[in-house]
Image (tube, rainbow, N blue to C red; front, side):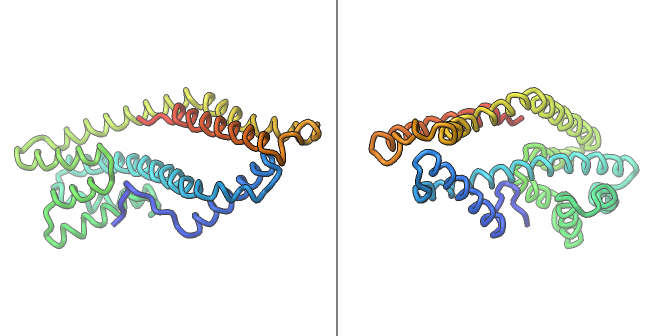
Length: 246
């Protein structure tokens, strides 16, 4: 069973990240210290890079799952309106998801596990609760709670599901609008993040004598280290500002 709250990097992904990280770190070491071996100091940062990439992939996977979940709810509501019980409706829903995603979706695997669980007489509430906990998504958790309450009280589950779909769509639309609004700012952030390194490279290429005073001495190493710390703090701050989640 997939835990969507955590993304575990594959060995190949870790190797690619490590190679890219060390190449970039070595380039920065040459630019700021004129010594590629200094990149060894940045090795502990590789763990932070693994966590950052893993978190980014986890968020993208959850966003994709949420969109697929919305389509599943629409299909489930339509099949229940056509006369299927909730337990029986998952079979045609799976077929519709197969036609929509051609096997390239997370939700198909989840529906398949729900169908298998129902065939083994597992309670629907348990199956949905398990999916909700692993998904880490508020919408799925709310659906699991709503379906359990509606089952006990005889509430209109179809109406509730349609309302949930509307809520998810509104949230996704707001997210898209925010992404559109901050796209230009993110581009500016990326350019400004690269500018300090571009300026140092330009000075090294065009006026190497001017930069030589900063290499091979304590004052130069201290000055460059302070500059790097400030740059990385500004990059981290800018990333936090432009990383808006809905």
